[in-house]
Length: 118
Image (cartoon, rainbow, N blue to C red):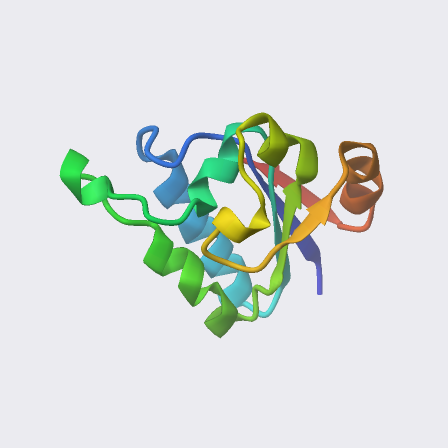
């Protein structure tokens, strides 16, 4: 079994990229691959509580993120400095995450067989 790390760096409602990445995540997980996510840079906004994408006629991705546990996608990481730079902390997010310092990200990435950036 391969271990996949998806790195989420984009804003949540920036075109169709998020939906395509979520589809890839769910597909890999459905085939019993170990899947983890790392949120960094503007990608931390994807997990922000109280988003209202319907006001912009966009799909609410929060429901899909909340369903990740059904697919055994439980390893969610967030780069601490990305949160801090945007005035957020882990309590502002819709899911429990492990906060990782920027200097530890390379070590985290090295623990996975496949790295998939968004």
